[in-house]
Length: 316
Ligand SMILES: NC(=O)c1ccc[n+]([C@@H]2O[C@H](COP(=O)([O-])OP(=O)(O)OC[C@H]3O[C@@H](n4cnc5c(N)ncnc54)[C@H](O)[C@@H]3O)[C@@H](O)[C@H]2O)c1
Image (cartoon, rainbow, N blue to C red; front, top):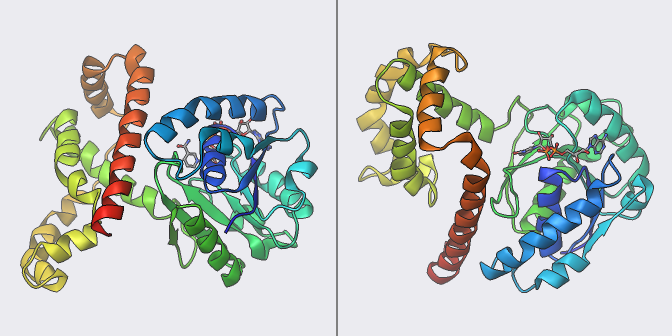
């Protein structure tokens, strides 16, 4: 399945969506409130495409094929004309989303799904008064979506089930891994899980049980190795001879015992921040952060290339 997507707001996330759609054969129109941004975005994407191709992450397409599907637009009307999908990726402020969704709903064809990349705002807060609110939902990527497939689909109370189903089909068609929520909730699924983990990480360091690097090791050299293949439920299903119920029978008491401690909130920006920041800056000076980001993205590409190959060869 291919079609035309309008990417509205072409900063970090919008650019990444443009790659995800265009790589899958979709035309990606790009519009931004700042008229210089879509053309600049096309340039930045052009620089990235050879690296993606080198890692086998453009499928059958060449960098030139993908680049030819990108269409920077100067007018929002032109960008939305006849599209099948709209992906809003403007700044994370509810009043921006409210104003923009009024225009998107007015200008996009009735048949188009309108998704928002918002990381935390419930869709009911910016779609409620729209005539076309049935075709609106949150489609939240983990940045960058062309490397990380998980994508949260979050309906407002009035989003039509067909809209969610269509969104699921489109996300699967472009190679994403949709998480379709039954109803909306602040911060959705991924950031709630990440928030729970960060809260415990800050607490461990704040209470002086271990340092920041120890927490990073626990994840990087421990849990995350398994989690890059299987999630936490599958992990515990495989960690007891008779599966998940057996695991819970054996270990629920252990986790219940620490639950009381875990309810105490830690002030992330309090004294613990000095300790964590001092440790981080000793390992990575602030001036080295951009290089480290580029390193991370290159390694992530290589990892995704490996995982795609492994899935094809070994089955999923
Ligand atoms: N950065 C992330 O890791 C991440 C991950 C997932 C989702 N998101 C979400 O994606 C959205 C965009 O975030 P980002 O990191 O790409 O921000 P960004 O600042 O990089 O890009 C935002 C773009 O929107 C443009 N813009 C401003 N007002 C606009 C308007 N009214 N209409 C259209 N475009 C407008 C800006 O010119 C800019 O190019 C936010 O809702 C954010 O929460 C971000």
